[in-house]
Length: 182
Image 1 (cartoon, rainbow, N blue to C red):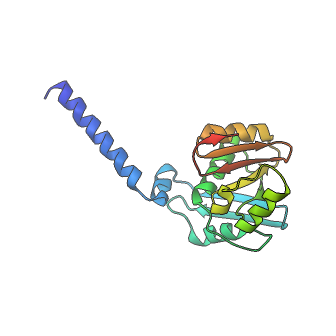
Image 2 (image 1 turned 45 degrees about the horizontal axis):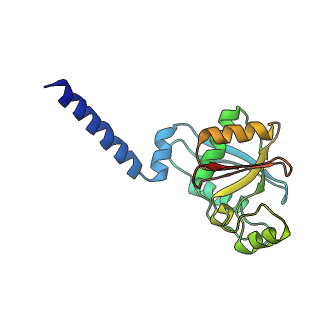
Image 3 (image 1 turned 60 degrees about the vertical axis):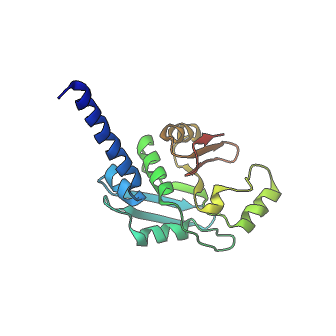
């Protein structure tokens, strides 16, 4: 067999494998990327709630723990719960690993109902009309003992979605939308 045929076969094999991975559900891809549990500790300064959860057991997402996270990320102003994109929890877990911290994540804003989002838009600048918060795909937060600049830098390096930097308001925004930063 010629070297060109061998190279072509390897290329086709790798391409097929990549296409197969792309077709896997998110939970299956997550299980391929890590074999260890994913644990988060979060505080919500608005509600006074704290949550420690193992939302991914090393093989799959835990539906009960995702439900607890969805409730924790609820729009507390109107007490509405929405399913949060699990990739957002993966991002914050990866971010803590990059920053080498297990300090609690301080959730400033998770899910926002359309009514809450509109109210916030009217009260000041910086709130998007079609915010990823209203889709359950965004969070604003800071991490105890870690500078916002370091959080922003680490979040941007992951190239996993949008990253917004709000030092005056003391939070960083991440979402599971397209890769962008502001």
